Each structure stands twice: as structure tokens, then as C-alpha cells.
Image 1 (tube, one colour):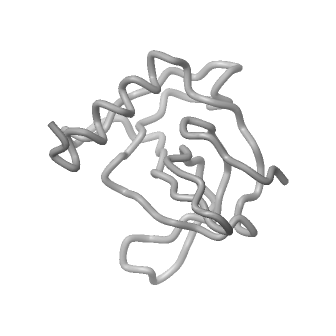
Image 2: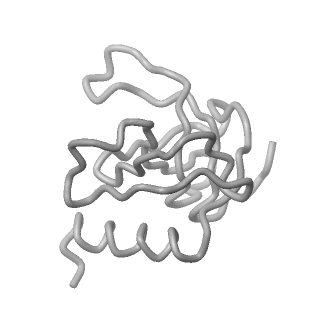
Image 3: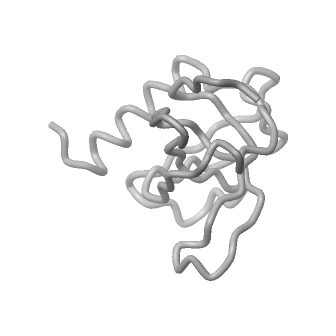
Length: 110
């Protein structure tokens, strides 16, 4: 497995439920590499009922998604690198820009 992770890369990870009752293997987008851990945001195939912080990405060979997916920037988890299961790809520059805008909106950075 990689030693350093870049924002926008996509992986299959063991992602916890928000109530921490369980976990599921999910696609996720890297937000930050923080030493032995990586901070990710959740990606799901449900593209309805999006929050203002979510955005939709089309499947491409570059990002590794097989269906249209929603990047849920409001669902963030910091996960041990040992829980990363597979590398998928990376967001396009356009989708990386959407990620940055969503994070700015979520954290009220403007």
C-alpha cells in the first residue's frame, strides 16, 4: 500500500457508520494524509437528497467509480492506513475543484 496519500485520490476503505455501530467497505476520497491515518470523505451511489455540501461525479477510468456517485463531504472520518483496502484512482481537476468548494461551504471558510 502507498505510504503517502494525496487529496482527491479515491480508495475503497473500511468506513464507519456515523453512529459507530458498524462499518462497511465504501469508496472514499482522500482529504488529508495525517501520518499513520488518512482523513476521507464518504462516497455513495445514492445521488438523490443531496446536502448543499455534496456533489455528484460521473464514473470514469480516472476516478475508478463504476456508477454515478455522490461525494458526501459532510461525512468525514479519519481512518488508519491499515483499513484501506484498494486504490481506485483520483478525482479530475474539475471534481477536485468541486471538493474544495464543498469543503469551504461546509466549514464556512470564506
